Amino acid sequence: MPADRAPTRIQKKNRAAILEAALDVFSSHGFRGSTVDQIAKAAGLSKPNLLYYFPSKEAIFNELMAGLLDTWLDPLRALNPEGDPLEEILAYVQRKLQMSRDFPRESRLYANEIVQGAPRLHDVIASDLNVLVEEKARLLQGWMDAGRINQAHPKHLLFSIWSLTQHYADFDAQVRTLMGTEDPFDAAPQYLETLYRRMLTPQN
Amino acid sequence: MPADRAPTRIQKKNRAAILEAALDVFSSHGFRGSTVDQIAKAAGLSKPNLLYYFPSKEAIFNELMAGLLDTWLDPLRALNPEGDPLEEILAYVQRKLQMSRDFPRESRLYANEIVQGAPRLHDVIASDLNVLVEEKARLLQGWMDAGRINQAHPKHLLFSIWSLTQHYADFDAQVRTLMGTEDPFDAAPQYLETLYRRMLTPQN
DNA sequence: CAATGATTTGACCAACTGGTCAAACTCACG
DNA sequence: CGTGAGTTTGACCAGTTGGTCAAATCATTG
Image (tube, rainbow over all chains, first blue to last red):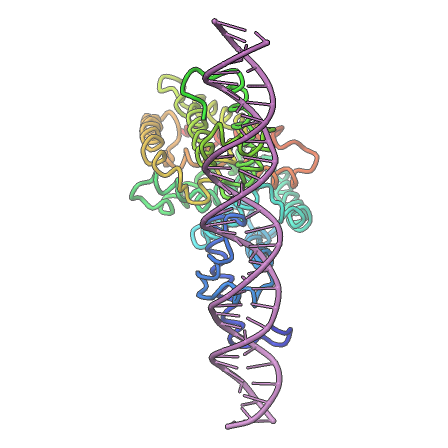
């Protein structure tokens, strides 16, 4: 194991390569379905060499998850109480959709975990994410009560945004097969904008 | 292996117990993450005994999937060209939502497969499901062109229904944690009805 | 260039996994 | 109740997997 001094050039390169490879492997086979050898080969290292940089398979996974969660929640944090409600929400939807297009592996890694009961994520969800969701749910409820957007259950509104946007990453295999030659991400932004605009635009 | 005569009482009971146990285990750990021993224990059998009824782990999985897919697509098949468009769609949404509540393991089993690239399902999706989707997409488009519901990309409309309803089964761990003591399925039907009603009710 | 620490690897291990098999046991039925 | 088919199991096997270790190689710097 490298000492806890400043990381050398080689350490930086190899740790990055390992995490990149691990994202690839974990996101397409799940934790249990992935092998250390697979990850090592994908990173261009031997298995013992990989285990020189990370103490265990689980440690790689945890580091990956920790790094992921922050990025994942950023768009929600960016929901601005001062902005125009409908435009804020629509922007959030588009940001999430872009993340599904640009970082589908991250989305699938997360999905894999949650579908299997979130055994390794329950604590983070119950603490950090929960706090953030409560805060943003209150913000949405405030907008609704002020009549600036239509009434709707705020938490379900958030769930629906996550669900609709991440679907394009998580169910990519299905979506692309059914779309044929058409790229799903061509029409998706328009579709989701229309959906949320019609649902949330205040009716007098 | 039991002869291919009529199944005995014991065969019927044990095969059913195995499939039930397999659904439990596969849906919460994925194919690769599940072991034959786990399934056997959950079914109350020894591993060799289980393998007396099914030739392999993969065979159990395949039989489970085959049985699942039909039930899974039934609600979509039931979309009736003769009915009132909006009510047909809303009924479909509610039916799918009920399935997420009543058969969450089936939903998660399916999700697990698709998230990991649908290696064992690609053919069924590309053939059977694709045919059904094309047919129903045309039906939806017809309704839109006749001005009976609002315009929206018909395939994306279907994706959104699957996504929103299955989310409550697939991301159950997350949804329940964030909902606290409130049962997600209390408000979900209302939320989804409102969403699709606002989105699809024809605007003059 | 010497030497010290960082990096890499082949060989290895114990636990686990899917699957086999012969022997034992159980059950239905004549 | 006996007998043959149906059922169950302990022992076993070969392949895989996460992880270890000592020895070898490489990079850095005094």
